[in-house]
Image 1 (cartoon, rainbow, N blue to C red):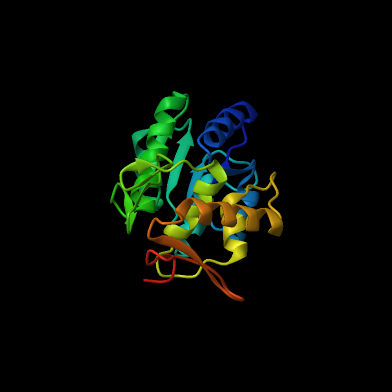
Image 2 (cartoon, helix red, strand yellow; image 1 turned 90 degrees about the vertical axis):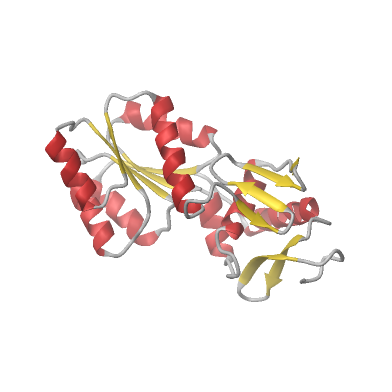
Length: 228
């Protein structure tokens, strides 16, 4: 999952970023509303963690603009503004959840998992393709009921493909899903990750097909590895 954190308090941002990266998420951090608005216009995210009291552009305006563009990305608001009227106003603007500072990191993580679970699997706790079963929020995969051992990058790649069933995912989309701004994934690195994922999926009835010039497609296959 790729997450945008819009938070201007360095200590809070550091703790949230560490938590997200520990959970194998790619996270981009911005400290102003203008930067948050620009990032949301130029990149695709699976979740926005949004402080309301941002400099340059208030978090409420960032949220209003996001929903005005028709974006359905889940938004978890984290703010010191704890009045009931303020919570109602922000939820009516389009926030999906609201967490008042100070908060326990464990509660933040639980709320984040709930939002990602609802958005990534449309309310279904797991995704299935052939004999493969995925728990996206839990970063777990099983093949015929047996755990499938994947690195964080391999799971991120499988997740990005599984979230676009029957649709081609471009190399740019895969690289964006796997990397935050302070990380780099070369074309060669992506090729290596795809090769390793394909090896681990061999004989599973699921494969990664190359659509020349367009990208990749996760699909069910016959036992010989050809499309079913």
